[in-house]
Length: 71
Image 1 (tube, rainbow, N blue to C red):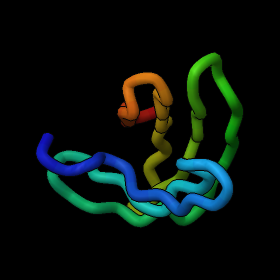
Image 2 (cartoon, one colour):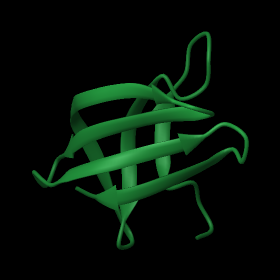
Image 3 (cartoon, helix red, strand yellow):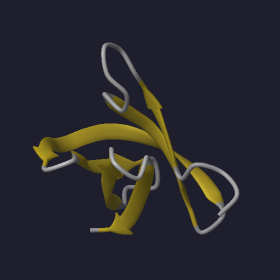
């Protein structure tokens, strides 16, 4: 994938609030963050996209990489 699969807003730290994701070549705006939690070495979010699908987003701080999966 040539672009970052998640766009996010950052404040004091990176990846504080995801605002959009790429799925199957389409950019989807995130309309709601359903849940968020810290994991060892990163952050995880469960979000609802504008197409009403729910996704899990996982950010690895060590690899500086996002993983996107359909929930």
